Image (cartoon, rainbow, N blue to C red; front, side, top):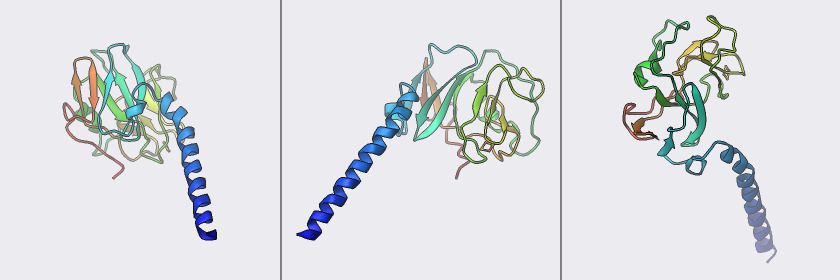
Length: 183
Ligand code: FES
């Protein structure tokens, strides 16, 4: 009898702990935007009809913070390059598409890079848009190619398809399979 009372207490405490964890996560998921309810799903649809050029929004795909962005069309970018085998890696995957999704996790130690559309950073030319990781200063191109700092690899790129004004993240389209630097 004593053992079953202890079991009951342990289960109750465990259940309360789980509820507290879900409660704590909810504001974070909510802040990710309208697709947060599907954040752990393998397919997420994102309406890009209201996006302005150089705008970035954040959603979640398979639990990853995921950037959805729109570049001007046409768009030229004259920033520095890192001359290694990953030079223009993501840019080649994404091709000419000016709306696309990237995994928002720095490949150095996992911080979330910040989007700097107005070029408020320390590299030259100073007005080019880049991602800047606030933790140790890695810089990525708008396509997520790492060009400066300790990040060893480009950002992840989920499979994705553009269907009218809907970016379908997790659906094989102009990006057919997940470029996953974390595995
Ligand atoms: S975690 Fe991004 S530079 Fe270290």
